[in-house]
Length: 229
Length: 277
Image (cartoon, rainbow over all chains, first blue to last red):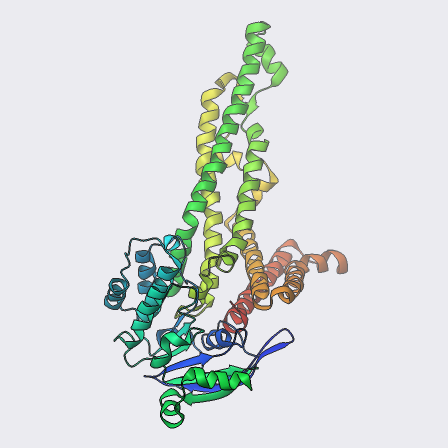
């Protein structure tokens, strides 16, 4: 389980996260929802210690941050994490060199799934294919949790559909996923849990299935309610 | 240790192209300089002997014998050493900023490796040291070739031959790069590595606190340099040259170890706790 406990983050005088707490479980897809600048990416960066916090604590399976956490949590930011002059093949070799949890068979399978060639240079890829390579680099690690920042941002509808298919495939299986997205329509039916952020705090955390069954509302309905208030 | 070596190998591969081009430029200019200066000299003596009919002795009275020192102190030589030194300095900044700035966001991957982040720092520091030592070593090999070239072009009667070792002693600057003793070598290159580590930590202050970090980094850099050279200031300004040279050197080595240790410690702290993408 990933536990985010009362985290506070300030950028200069602006407090982006005032007091954010939530949990994300293995086997669940947790979606962080909020308007631009609400601090969704900052939360993912904080979990992976890519940004320091002013206060609060984050635990992964009960442990605080340690470099070996990256064998348990893989983070897929909204930007490619490899050198542009690398071929896909070189990027995979790099991952294989540094990560014990790297699963080459899975990487090959994802390449095939996305119809990517390992000889292609990262800098020559389209935005959609770059996002797919980024996704491959994160999903081919046998980790308990996958963090995804805006995986659908700025890419065409076919690529979005392909990426959305990943969520229902065995590539996710029983892993825990924390995802941030604006394109809620693409994955609304896949989300187990939604965490709505506004003004630096969690305004609502709910099980999507429960809210559908008890109140007959979709995630977007709840979002509208929250942001209209 | 394994991760450090893998990262060092990775950094060296990234450096290879840059280093190769730099070596070609630097050594190309040096060889061209050796040829131009040597040919210039022989053409002048030919001119005097053929056109003006001077004898060998008379020409030697006018010019004296040419030595390789004239090449070592020329702009071709110093210019290239300046280019190499500037390139190393440029690379000290590039080695960090290229992973943060522009379209390249490789910093994400470096900071997400399942290894202690200090390995990233140490691998980059070692890369700069290896880069410098590669230049220094290749320069010795090249000197041998350049001396040979000089001897081919300038007739024996008009030149005074130098060995590579003598050629390296022709200027103070070369003396810094090629010290006389192994102990001096350790001091010179130890100080160099410490200064690089201080710059690295300055960069990490900037990457952690951005604009505020520049000011913190400058303060840190000034303090580090003050501490590093403090034995000399204290001895000169306050104690009226009280210490023997050996004692001063020992104190300098201790100051060097303190500054290097604190630079690495601070760099580690910033990478672990304060760095941001």
